Each structure stands twice: as C-alpha cells, then as structure tokens.
Image 1 (cartoon, helix red, strand yellow):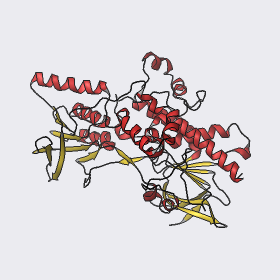
Image 2 (image 1 turned 120 degrees about the vertical axis):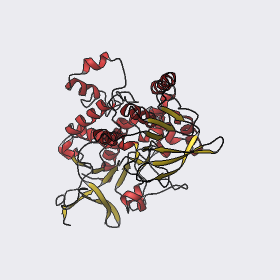
Image 3 (image 1 turned 30 degrees about the horizontal axis):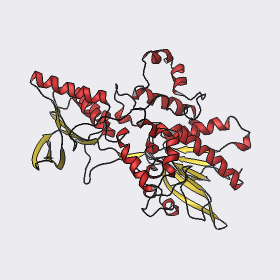
Image 4 (image 1 turned 45 degrees about the horizontal axis):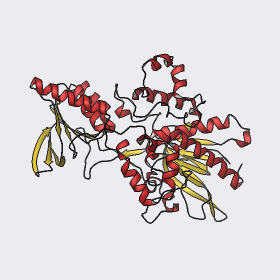
Length: 441
C-alpha cells in the first residue's frame, strides 16, 4: 500500500480523531475563532472520521423518540448563545422555528436533533476527512522531545493509499462502543441496540416472522427497544429481562440536574477520590439504567390493556438474568433465571437484543504507542488535567486531549451532550494557551 503525506512542511495545530458531536463542537469553536483573528493566530485543525459521513447513534433514531437533554444544550449555546450554529438558528433555516416553539417543549425529536448535527457538520466540512480510519499514531522526536504525532489513516472500505498527517496536538473523541455480556456472539438474531432500526427494517422488508423477541436491559434504550419491537411486530411476544424489580424513573428534577452544570465539573474535578465516587453513585439515576417516566407509564398502560383483552404480548421478566444462550438453525434457546428462587426457564425466541449500554474505547487499545506515553494513577486510570489534556511523561511537549472516557476525573458529563459546548470552548482555550506558551506559530 502506498503512503501519502498530507503535504510537505504542513503541521496541524490539532488533529481530531473521530467526528461525533464532541469533535464537531470543537470544529465549530475553532472555525468561529479563526473567523475572528488574523491569519497567523488561526488554529490549523483537521478531523478524521472512519464513517463515510456524519452519523450519531443512527441505529436508535426511532421516529417518535425525543432527546433527554434540552435543545439549549446544543453544540454551542452554553459556550456562546450568540453563535449561528445553535439549534434555534438551525430551526430558523429549516423554517420550523415558530412550529417548534408552538410545541412548548425543551426536548426535540431525536431524528430532528440528528438532522441539526448533520446541518452543523456540513458547515464545517472543509475541516473533516470522512472515510478516514486512524490505523496508527506515532510519536515524532526532535532534540530528545516528542514534539509531534504522525497520524496514519486509510479508507476502511479498503484499497487506495494511506495518508500520514503530522500534528502538534490530538483530540481523541472516538465515542463509545457497545458493552456486551462476556461470551456474547452477535449474529442475525442476536443484536446490540446500536443496530436496532436497520435490523428490524430488514426483517420487516423480508416479511420474516417473529414470534418472540427478548430484550436484555433496564435503561432508556432497553425500554425504547421493547416499545419499538412491540409496535414493529404486532403478532410477536416481547419479553423484557432485567435484574431490577421494575424500570427506574430518570431523575431530571431541578436540583439533581445541577450535576450537569459547568460549575459541577470544577467541583467534581477538585474533590477527593472518595467524594468523586459518592457524587457519581448519588447521581447515577440522572442518566444510567433509568427510563423516562412517560415511557414507563406507556409500557405499563400497554401491559394492562393487553391483560384486560386477554392477549398479553408484552412481558416483564423482572428480577431475572440471562444465564445461557443456545442457537440452532431455527431459533434461540434463552435460559433465564429468576433470581429470588434460582428457578430457570428456557424461552424459545427469534431475537435477542442487548440493551446493555456502551463503554469508552480505551486509548491504549486504539492508538497503540500513545498509551505508553500517558501517565496513570495508582488505580491505573489516566491522569487528565482540568483542560481535558492527558498528563504525559516529561519528554512529551505535544498534547493529547480526550473528549469522553474522563468520568473518573470530570464526572458524569464526560460522555453526555450536556457539557459538549462548554468542553469544546475549554479545549480551544487550552490549545491557544499551549501554543502561546510553547512559542508555536
């Protein structure tokens, strides 16, 4: 395979790896900065994304699902309410501003917010290279210091040359990857919710009969998957399996929501380790393994109506776990244990959907040598500055920023949209300050 360099003498101030909402927000912040300063003060930035175009949780863009975060926590408003990249400016351009206001809601449809992301991404597309999967990052040393990184990317579809770009700083935002129970083997009949909509679409298009589907999980994506499968396959039994007694409502009360305030990140970052753990545990119910009350009530209402009608298609197998999954050419055999008694039941099913959440992608596993340069604490967690910059060994003068995977230092907002706009501004400010301190131009 041939290797092409991005250009003789070209060094990026920052290369973003991954182009989801977090690095999109950073691209916007940088473009807005560059439009207001002289040529020599501009930040030379680029972003690499392995997908052929912008996409964010496409597999869960259910037609009537709404966001769980206010539209005001878009890509820019919390950083700069006057930005023309705001959701309100998007609505104005789409000629839906008045219509949206008439809905009297803070929570847009998820498909609408995804369209907003695509609209914003199109406006900064000169900064992005799609179909560019990063395959290696190598430190570049001069005078005993690691001053740059050489980032090699290629088209994940195969063929063609790889490209090497050199950068003073990296901003890693590769997003989350599906979390699956140990030993899980995905197949045409065993999915993660990240594949829900296209998988269901294929079955519906082929008129494939579904008699029973099982969903594992107790969070928002699990409840949405149960509801979507129930509507998509009107003759099927849908079984929801989880270890809780029932779905837990999300705590979106005003005081609990303060954990998402920008100031809360400062408090969390400066707190002792045991306080961090307590805060995280206290406020898990704002985001993790919880469900919107409206959806809980809707599913409960559906179960009752079916019970009245004598045809119960929606089943909640609570206080239960899946212990084993077997498969033959016809169906799945799913062994479910009722935890209070240990009694086991084998359900024959056509589908098993894992709504088991996501986990950060490890920087070491994905970026090789880079992980060896990063400092870790006594619990083997990455040490990260308040400006989202990874602490590195002394000889490294180039920088690595993380967007995501920093819950242990920055709190629950690390992987959420709530802090995206503010974090992008903080990283932009750090890039400028670091370039000035190092005397870079």
